[in-house]
Length: 253
Ligand SMILES: Cc1cc2nc3c(=O)[nH]c(=O)nc-3n(C[C@H](O)[C@H](O)[C@H](O)COP(=O)(O)O)c2cc1C
Image 1 (cartoon, rainbow, N blue to C red):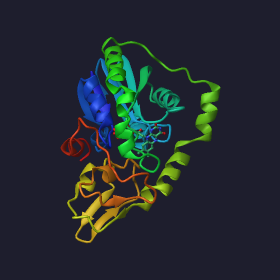
Image 2: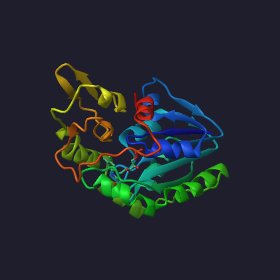
Image 3: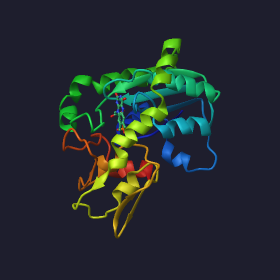
């Protein structure tokens, strides 16, 4: 079994590890000219971004040649995922894949413009992450089928709230408004955790390019808490309790 993952703050890395098999980082695979993944079961673990998968995960599905008899997809999310399952079904079909199983694990919502991370962490026990995971891990090990049926209503909703629309809103409201304050010590960790190679750190400071994935890995993982965006619902930053900064660097760098 092979489990490919995308993570910014560790939730998906933790879930991918719990599901098991050979773990492959999607940002690292995407740096290859060609991607071929073949196994008896192949899956993706990714966060919900604006009720869809991250842009890079969609690009991965388009670029990778995945060969398997059992293709699974597990989202992690905080508040809700609306048409996110339907997006995967449509993207998988376009890639010539049959989606065998899809589910989602509710965890901390790291969307800082809306959510206070302190409150998210404090209320996490009520989400029973381990209980959710036990079921999903067991399902995947037993190759349970849990496909999704995409209705016309799903397609209409997806059309209304398209990736471009969502990505543009997210970028305009957040990523294009990143600022770095005087606490920055130019340690370069933001560049190392960025899955999109969008950040360079020089003597002059931190420079953001134009292909941000809007994942907030830089912001949440900054040891100095020096990176900010125009609207933040709290001052606490987040990384999954089972995942270290080194793990994120290893995954994305
Ligand atoms: C830009 C952005 C958009 C998000 N949109 C949603 C969303 O629509 N619904 C939701 O439930 N969670 C949303 N989230 C929360 C993440 O899906 C969730 O915290 C996820 O577990 C993070 O995974 P990671 O720790 O592996 O990066 C969003 C997070 C970010 C950064």
